[in-house]
Length: 55
Image (cartoon, rainbow, N blue to C red):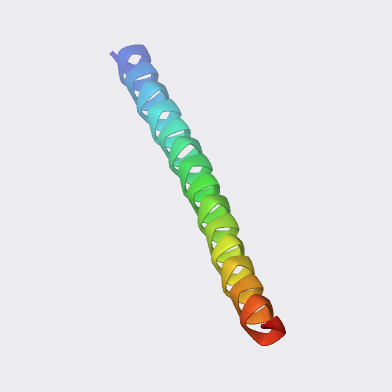
């Protein structure tokens, strides 16, 4: 009885931990992509300003 309960708790904790790791990696990758996207947008704006200024 106790052994079965212990195993199910262990499995539950294992799933929770993996869920958090999975969520964190997705959030991290999403954040990285967002940062890169913002940098790209900034770079595009900056190049437009430079081109407009140079005309």
